[in-house]
Amino acid sequence: MSNSTKLDIQNLNAWFCEKHALKNVNVKIPDKEVVAVIGPSGCGKSTFVRCINRMHELIPGAKASGKALLDGVDVYGGMDVMDVRRKIGMVFQKPNPFPNMSVADNVVAGLKLVGTHSKKELAEIAEERLKSVGLWEEIKDELKKSGASLSGGQQQRLCIARALAMNPEVILMDEPTSALDPASTAKLEELVKKLKNEISVVIITHNVSQAARISDMTAFFYLGELVEFDETRNIFEHPKNPLTERYITGRFG
Amino acid sequence: MDILSRRGRERLIKYICLLLTVLAVVPLLWIIGEVVYNGVSAINLEFLTALPAPFGESGGGIGNAILGTLIINAMASLFGIPVGILTGMYLSEYDRTSRLGSAVRTVIESLSGVPSIIFGIFAYSLIVLTVRHYTAIAAAFALGLMMIPLIAKATEESMKIVSNDIREAAIALGVPKWVRTTKIVFSIAKGGILTGCLLAFARISGETAPLLFTSLFSFYWPIGIDQPMASLQVLIYNYAMSGFQNWVIKAWGASLLLVIIVVSINVIVRRFAKPKYKAGV
Image (cartoon, rainbow over all chains, first blue to last red; front, side, top):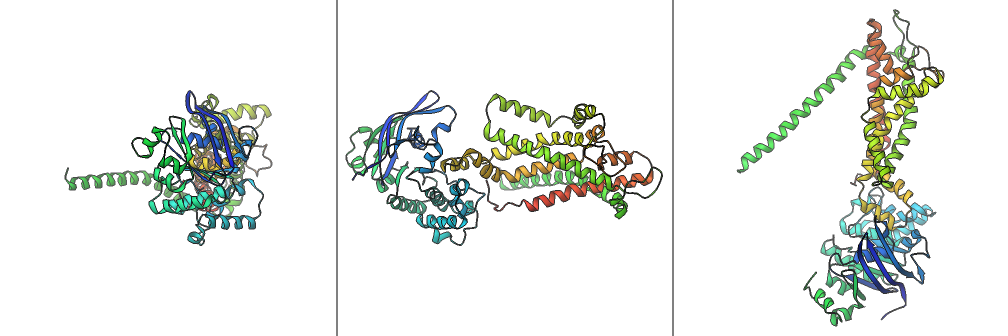
């Protein structure tokens, strides 16, 4: 099942001041698959994901060491940090569209703010990306409205469209459905499954059954360590580590 | 606690708030009413466009003072608004925690409490004493300095309340910090910043003390920004104290005009800067 490796993370360590938040993590994220990241609160899931697009280091006192090779190029050294974040998109727990921009402008915000695209190109990209997240039919008459006027689930898909508009190679999602209602969650899960036709997806989730439903591979973190990383089927049917088994069966965390 | 007493208390609080609001608004309306009542008879074309008549003669106008106030306020805004906004931006986006940041913050907060006459004396000793004559530049400098703390504080607070989620969204898109600061955070905070600028403008439009030390007054049309210049504030001060009926009426007219200028600039700026989207931060 494993394709070639998209993102090769080697000996990744992260700290918040003195606190060692991530301990020597090694993971190979495959190309065009969905990797779920699970584990109890405070286990380092978010830190792990934020190390990949170098957002961890923005917190005062935080630092990271190790390598994260995107197609063989280290995001810590081989690339400009802005390029890293353009190639590795991110979607957050709380939908965060820009309230000062229209729906259409939100989708192409990244390109509009730093790129040199013409108005026509931007409009085309906006339409294409809204279609790929399944929002186009719902909101094509409301493109001029504020991004913040949509419902929560629509806002979250808008944020995904905004990340996709940068043509990323990997998209990171930090509990993207935890603020959404069940119907919106279902739509978003469908979208995640569809996305892997194009790019790699790393998705943090508190919902173990969501990990089972949508991911190809699952990583289980506990106290800053990567306890187990395997195909999702193996993790859920034959976990090697007793901690993993206890977590996925809901006995702690 | 039965429900009626709770409702009663609810209503009591509401009416207390209403009463206090009325108490606050009545003197304001009174002042405006008084200014309009006494000032409106003074206003005519000659009043708006002519030079002041010599002491003891009737007629004449305050055209030079209107123009002078507009020039001085414009120069002060040209200096105070950019410096104030950039200072606030620095405090909110670039330096929230360091010693320099908190030192700047303390200075800004103390400056906004400094009496205006101090700004006047400062500009007087720095500029007027150096060039050895009264000058409108010194007036604009003093008033601009007064605007900075007000605008910086408003900018800092308005930008600070923009949610960090929004900043993270921009970071994750690979948007450089200066673009994020100017095109996203600043743009979202624009309403609050604009309010701060307008308040600062209104405040300096009423200041007389700094002008007495700097631009002083002139009975002629402004001929250069490095010369003494007439202003509505100083004109009101001089005329109101003169005891000469023609001038006292003109002081009322000038007061009314000052109110009209501040209010209309407020309305015009707000009309042009109407936010595209009403959605919250």
